[in-house]
Image (cartoon, rainbow, N blue to C red; front, side, top):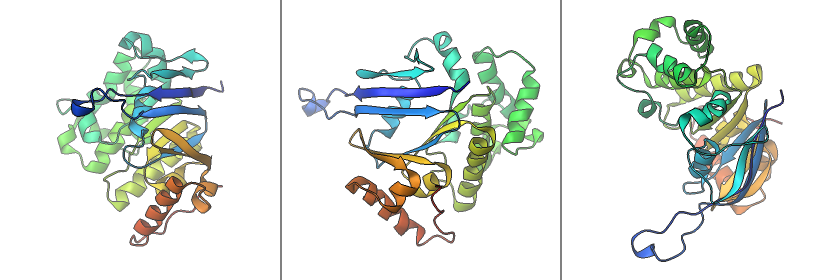
Length: 270
């Protein structure tokens, strides 16, 4: 199956607040379209307020756009009751920016990984699925009895990734998954996601403001600014010769940051 997740002409505006209540608020998204097939690795980059989180919420069926559609294999994807979206959640999973906030502190790792299997009504040997997910993120089965407070930052992020993997999705939507991690942990998590995409053939939308991480993982890049996609193309081309002011600013910022890091900026993938 050559599954495809698509967004067509998405638009969304939030109502103004306070003194701006009677005015037209700037659109959060304007005429945004993208398509991700199995095996694709697409970076979505942009500064704060560009609309990245809004777009991600719409793709996750957590928010309804004012205009446009999201489809998965031509079937419409719209927010609704949890049972109506089980089919979609089995195929498309989310890796959060802040794993500490996404992991219930009252559950141990085994229960955290078991929960999506139960919620999505997935049949089979749940214990085996959980162990397989742990193995894929290089965590020992001894972790199963630990609670989030007993885990390091890197272990929490791996558990969050394992939780996304346990339903056996074919697409991952990752929201700044290495933001706030120190350099060794950042490289470890990026290597793990890279392996999942290039070895297992998962489709990836990698949302970030970090072009270095995008260059390592993604063959294509979309630049979002002011709720619009202002530039798109191969990551190598966007990084080497950006065509818009917004893309140039991101490339310049990435180069300046990595001048002071011990590791060089990873070369863009062709």
